[in-house]
Image 1 (spheres, rainbow, N blue to C red):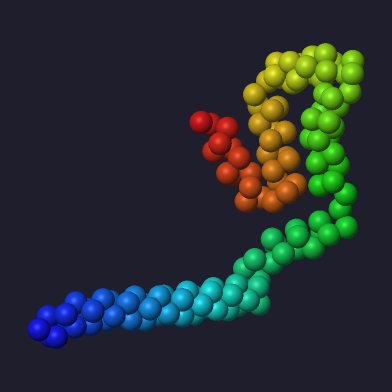
Image 2 (tube, rainbow, N blue to C red):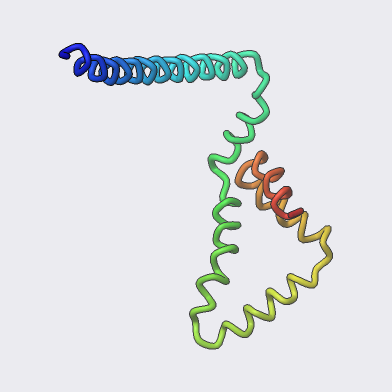
Length: 129
């Protein structure tokens, strides 16, 4: 009789321990993968494979163009709250909407490239939807 009562409890305890062990194993595997990825990145830097990207990041350290682009993007969002400016901003966006698609695409790419080259390809995929 005790065996019938203990067997399910032992099974639950065993499953709990197995789950705990699996979780610990996955966490350690994740940590190992992160360490390997960081090692690979450092090796690539040492080998010059990502030297160009690092150079671009270094050049942007003292650049003001990111701030300028961000300000240009935020000005209309703030200015619509200024009485009398909303109509002018709407007309401005209508004028932007009438620009040729090649020009607006160049604007998107330029802004994305300013914030990170890898972002440009992602933004263009969003635009095509």
